[in-house]
Image (cartoon, rainbow over all chains, first blue to last red; front, side):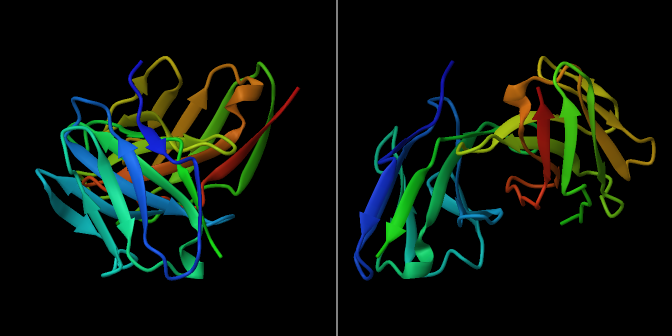
Length: 114
Length: 108
């Protein structure tokens, strides 16, 4: 069964450094998402991406964040200058036509900012 | 986005049915009701969704009230692997807004 994959599984970085989290969505999906979950808290929507542009973003997704689909398979989340409060699990998801279809989530990348 | 109310936690015995309730009284007529779950240390996982009619799939059944202000997720025979946080989510566009969900404990 196809699945969403994410790398790395765990990323440790120093405050102020740039990080890129990588995702390979399911191949025939057209809608892509990033969510995050701070330890012990709810899963939070960050951004949705369709047709090579951002469809919607949350208040969390400020100028420090960016997303890209650099080729036909990868979908990346970049944090330009990490802060301590960016420490969280970051989940990538992909899906077909939204609303009527489910989103498939990856296993997540645990980001630790020191 | 429609507000949902779910019990914080529930317990069930293994191999027994589980009924997980959700109130979504502010749901709009075009919102689909989706259920996701999150097993420990994993990403969220889709369970089922519906609009007005009851729905069944290999994982669960979804019973939707006639006025659509509430729904119930039914796990017909719970296993230890079903221990997770279950989220009831009305969706009208493509983003998922997760609430706190119901933490389901399965007793062996």
